[in-house]
Length: 423
Image (cartoon, rainbow, N blue to C red):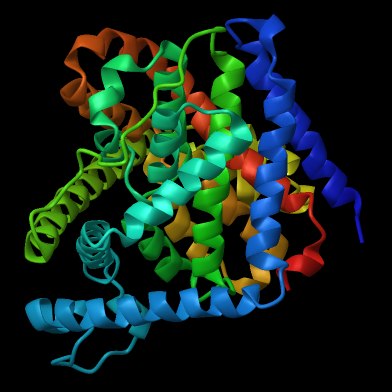
């Protein structure tokens, strides 16, 4: 049964599309067919992954696989770090929750999944899955071969790794295609971080791994649509055909594991550094705001973000009574990265947030669209295509806006559907 909350999410869809149209470089070239097609693809993917008979068994298997990976990673982490990683404690532990350390319980998962992803790419398993999604986006959304392959790669790889897949075609991409690739990279997450997010949310969200996987897949067509609305493709341009023999290659299975681990280490170091700096900067701002009071309490960045993003959270389908907390999470995602936002979401006790709000926030937060990723995007693409660095700099902030709205659009699509398909 549909409810007012479902209509609320539909209103959110309209507002998001209208906001991007307001920034469009060619307002007369609104892609009506792509809009309907992208929303249909999103809804179809959600239904295929949740409503088809037997899909719940697949999601349960995904959750089991994530739990197994987490347990295996924990064994390796404890071997290296011992009791610091939750192994046998040399003292009596009075608070088990205090044993959780982000650096030892979450970040090592990224190393393992990065190595495993590289191995699956070398064995062509991930390549064929990516190719299948590429054909889906090419046929249903009219993307050129190179763009379709890059969009599909973004579902499983990082926002910098995916351009490597079409490196030979980067100089041939039109301005619209380049922007599209940036937006989709910011609207999705890498497979290595997906598992970490699922591990964080599993204690408080049923089928957390399935929701996170679906979120990254379904946000890709949303990113395509919003990118095309803001910078439409000019008639007669674009459509580069990609060679499936991509530039991302490994010499052997061992080479894939070693290089995948090395790439994962760089991701871990980058995440750690960004988190340290951004959390410290927010704390510094809170110190400077400490002398101000509003509505009987200190003014903090967190409270300001909660107020600013309350209407945005409400438009995804969240009840107004929970919009403050949900809006704060969206603000944390934008300023402190989605990692911190997922950690904060995981800390919210089951009784303090409805299951619907928690699920919608999982979709809304699941993307790399944050201020820190702007620097990563500019740096990575400047290395891959130095001759287009100025162009990348001119597009990146629009890309952040569209990428952030793409995950909100995904949350709206999910929120517009009957709750019974997720039970």
